[in-house]
Amino acid sequence: MAEYRERVIDKQIAAALSTFGAVILEGPRAVGKTTTALQHAASSVRLDSSPDLVTLAETSPDTVLAGETPRLVDEWQLAPTLWNAVRHAVDVRHEAGQFVLTGSATPSDDATRHSGAGRFRRLTLRPMTLSESGESTGAVLFSDLLQPGAIAGLGGPDVEEYARLIVRGGWPALLERPGRSATDYLSAYLDDVSRTDLALVDTRVDPIRMRALMRALARNVSTEVAAARLATEAELGDAGSLSAQTVRKYLDALTRVKVVEEQPAWAPHLRSATRLRVSPTWHFIDPSLAAAALGASPRALIDDPATLGFLFESLVIRDLRVYADTLGGAVLHYRDGEGLEVDAIVDLPDGRWAAFEIKLGGQANIDAASASLRKLAARVSEQRAASLAGLVVVTAGKTSLTRPDGVKVVSLGHLTAA
Image (cartoon, rainbow, N blue to C red; front, top):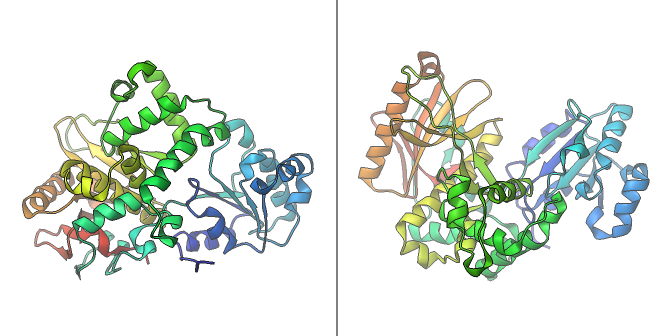
């Protein structure tokens, strides 16, 4: 059995179990939820191991919930009525750390119609960051980017290695068996999503149309894209067409099974009356899924710098989301009507924020990114400017440093959360 790789989220789970009656660990299939949850559980039951267990959970939930605590109930959404049973058990026991619930899909709203406020803590497990998979040198702490002071780092992956990491992704199964074909594994993964997983959220889809949408979405990853455009770009040949309404329905379904995530727009107060753009950008939960949808190999990405750049941006967003989660932060993006764009804004609960531009490298590109960041800092209101925690350019280079203008340039391969 492979040795457990510590995840950034482990500390969050432990902290949540000391405060809340139950922790809900969500995330896409094959991301390692069960393995991670078992590190924090004293007993467990896996509902997907037998149809009889699902029936038992629906008819006699107290039997399934009985056991040493924290009690792990894996794939709980297969028996949605467990929500109320867990909520009731937490109320009766009146103790923290009773249950860990894991699931790869978000049930319909009526399954969680009774509030879990004060009882449940939801956490999302995403594919491994480069620090979790061992590809980051760990020279720069994420928290270092959110406070004054110099950063420094040398070495780490080069651009060709980043192309390989994008295609492989942060999936535990591909890390544990490096000889396995990432393209074959993830292509099968997307097929399973199209044919099987979406039924778990009561969504009927045409697998051919869903795969066409995934390809269109992969071509537009890291960009603002309207449903109508995705419908137009979905290549169906003789299979008909895809409507914007169907695209929106399918995107909602993919979001509920944690395969795609939107990156919402940031809406700060500005010093001027500049109009803000509020459309989200879209990312697969891991850029490897976009690469698989496109059938892209590492070599193909190297030969197509534009696509490599968009997928590298998505890789950075994946890691930033994991690191921001540790601080309760959200990862947004900024775009206004005057053409100013900033790839990522990390917005923290205490009001602090940091702006990130993402570039493969090149001094001219880094200089332009730094100028965009400083322009945004000058454009926000005085109150927002006072809470600015950092301006950062994330690159695929081998050097991390703080520029004379105060902008930090950090290699993604140097970052870690610890």
